[in-house]
Amino acid sequence: MTTKTVSTPRMKVHYLNTVREELMKQLALTNPMQVPTIEKIVINMGVGRATQQASLLDGAVADLTAISGQKPLITKSRIAIASFKLREDQPIGCKVTMRGDRMWEFLDRLLSVAIPRIRDFRGLSGRSWDGNGNYTFGLTEQLMFMEVRVDQVDVPRGMDITIVTTAKDDLSGKALLDAFGFPFRKGEEPTSVTKAKKSKKSNKK
Image 1 (tube, rainbow, N blue to C red):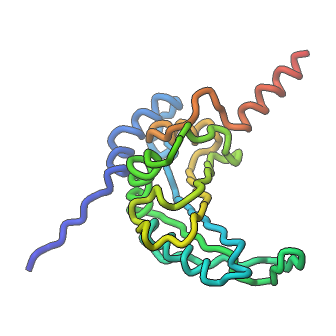
Image 2: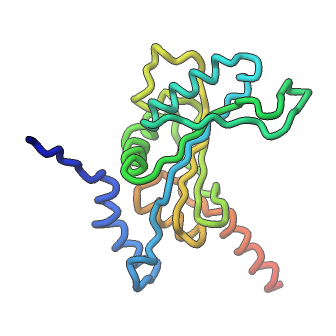
């Protein structure tokens, strides 16, 4: 009887062997347990036109399943909006939440394959942080993911990807993603940091 060998995801190994030590020095931390890490990755794909064409939602589910490797959760509207022909509790999109090895494997594919395939790519915004160390960015279509078959795509679908970290603030969260090689645009800081700097300047006047 043969035993199946399960390999540790490359990005997880990189974090444990390199990133964690670098962040301890950079953030002046004394305990390895204090070093921020990635907790989960959430992909949300809205399909507003599904209110008129339900088949579009099926395509979104198929794409997101291929991209993430797991079955998405259908998201539904919370309120009715007559002007958009939207009923309460109507399916309008789908999302997945990845943790553990699947999360690390997706992160690897995102950074090494998907993002480099974006046409006319000029870097990710360095400002899209939520104030608690979590980062969200949008993609305009699904075709940069190799898992999506071009001949089966009916329409381009955008998505929002949220990297949820254990960082206590945006600067620590950005330091974490920088260490993984996220291609942020140079010179852009989290909005919370920019506001804090402006506040300090105004208080000095």
